[in-house]
Length: 466
Image (cartoon, rainbow, N blue to C red; front, top):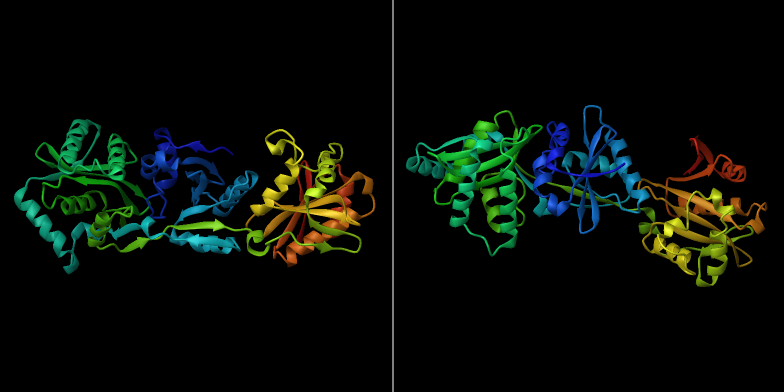
């Protein structure tokens, strides 16, 4: 599976999903993906009949909640994200999760950190509230509109198309002359992005409207219809036209929002003025955007690698004194052809004396895996590794024993000890394992302490449940 960076050329494909999406959040729209792609670097793919979007924030991957098509399977799509991250050693962070999908993720992940940042929340309004401004709470907006209509009675809102490019360019010059924010880098950047977006006025997936005073463009808005929500991406007006903002909001809702239940005017970016303004329009709700960061059981329960004892063996953390014996175990290529993982290739660099030991130490420090040294009379004779935590109560277990100690049941003994520890001390719900079809010794070992759960062209799979 490959993620492709979002471009303007991808808009029609993304719209196949977004046009019927009822999540109601601005992130689930072509406009937001295009406008903020230089910051969030969105990339997309399709899986399980769903649109998957991966964003990046300071090097961290953050995934949108899957957007299903007509035959989409959200659970299967989430599993694809989890597997994709697992294979690359990344945390499957699912962000900007709409409120309607939060229960699904809460039930999916046994341990998860959830956040809901106020600054991210979108201002969502009833369409009819903005269309009519009825009731006492909107008396201020009605008064402003009345003043606007008194001074500019012939001002009208009409669709903007590519043919209006000269009027739009002049509008930006007038806007910057009235309301310069050159010293505010954030506002200046947003203005430049808005200018780029308005160049797409007339595209089928956008709704663009402009308020004209004769031939002069005095206000404009760019929106996108997603499900039952009209998402307003850009809303700009000339402040010298008193009352033009509420007039634009009302006219746009009346002209383009009649078949929508909601109008989303996006978040306030922690701008005090924007927050005050958006609240004055009486939002029906501040739509939350939850961020789910699944945690594996190691983070919750395991502070240090414990000592495990069996009838004949002791399993402990690897130590620096084990490095020679551990390297010999890992570098036994003939023995490890059944291991299923290329230890040398996984280093991504040359093999040094501490390479494999350091990988084991780093994986535990990051709570990605637990490497146990399998000891007989204190001597390292093998390794058992609990790894590939799936964040849903499962992890994979592997075991390898030095060839000099083969045939004595040490692998079975060590494997069973770690499996029991994982299920009853780390509180996993299932331990998984696999072996190559040709590896009959491992098959017998796994079959003695686990249940066969399936097979494919390469492996036979086993599991042990609580």
